[in-house]
Image 1 (cartoon, rainbow, N blue to C red):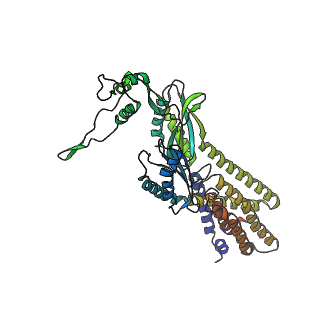
Image 2 (spheres, rainbow, N blue to C red):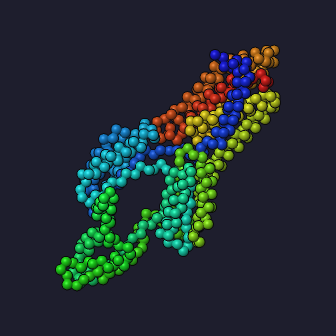
Image 3 (cartoon, rainbow, N blue to C red):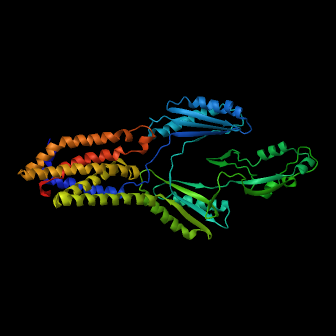
Length: 487
């Protein structure tokens, strides 16, 4: 089937193709997802198990080795490494590179099941293992909440209020709070007072461990209704904790906790992280986006929601945005569009000088339609505009100019040799079809190993996908766009 002759003899098909590529590409450009970098999946999980009071050797023999034996039965496992220290076991699990990111949720579920089965044989005192596989989230919107006269718990409470609102913004995946310092009740015991009342430290620890525990007291069924029983006795304040009876059995005098200790509320002495913004104590909030969304639109929606909530913000609290991926993505995409238009203007300018006005316009329109068609295919395939895909488009465009010049120049030469316009177009396209198709296939195959790689490199450098869409699309454009009316 001669595609070029079909388009030449049926100009309606030419205009239909131009309309489809042009309008579809413009709509795709407006709605396609935008990211700064492509999504990247980390095929690693870390299993953390606490064993308070155990030595490093005990942790290895009683916790690490049983977990490793269970984990090594995973068929998708690449390698496993572990660190056993006093009271702590850390196991790093790496999944083989040939497994696609879509298979990871099922693999992590199987890993958790095997870890859970192995943990049933742990000795008493071992804290249940924690499996962390959430390493792939990228926070595209990051800001700090600070205030001179606010404590860390007060800042955290306001951050929790913000999180409940921001997570409702369309396109938001997860909202995380950083810089949270855990609160604690400090019990400063006087050893002299405790010894004078005949109380040992182990007795006091046992009393505190038995109390203030949330437990179920069962339920009472009254007819068709069920009434849950909730035992009282939880401590609601430090004063109630100070009234706790700690005197040993058979003691003649009643001893309360406040008689032998000083109680105070405070923050932990060794927080995991402490944040400051502009020299003031702060907490941070990071917002990650749902895959495939337009980061620019979501970023603008987040800023608008923060401005709406500014009226309810406590006086003295400041919100400082120090990373906005939407601005970076907008700069990157706008930079590509600017570079493309500049390159197109340079190409058209050179062609206008050496090949004439009509030839330059034809090549410029062919390149523009090709880019719009590629954007339409990327939108259908769910490929976002980001650094890698934009780079692939730029690389592909550098090769597409040659194809357009070959066709247009061939038609001009045939016309100069006396061939009729219709015959010249048909002859040049038929003569150049196989060479250009071969060059297109070679260009695709040159980048295919990178983009189709099964390891992490292929997950990031998807450079072959836009190129694979761009170059065949160019082949169709160059066959259909050169209608006699254009010359």
